[in-house]
Image 1 (cartoon, helix red, strand yellow):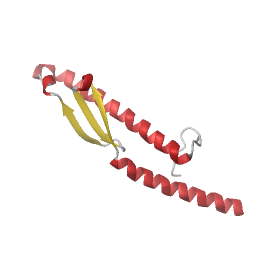
Image 2: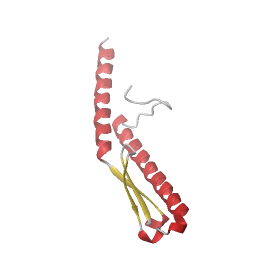
Image 3: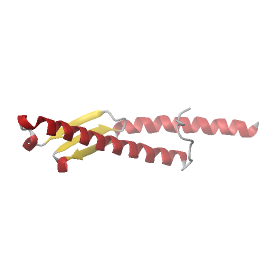
Image 4: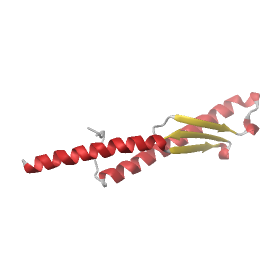
Length: 107
């Protein structure tokens, strides 16, 4: 039973570290770009949209669809970067422990 108690203690410590990591992710800002930097979208580590910057050169009313596509592409770029950052932080937290697919922490 000593090992079970130790395992539970480790699980609680990991859960606490997960909570801390999630709080830290809110302060991380990641910028995705498209159109060679004409459109920039900034997200926090929880994928909340924080800022959009659009170069004035692409603000032609006749080209609205182009701007819309660039915004979507920049958002997707930023979202991918947020996901990669979160996965890297999780890898640090778990010490490279490979969890089965679909398993989420905290439990």
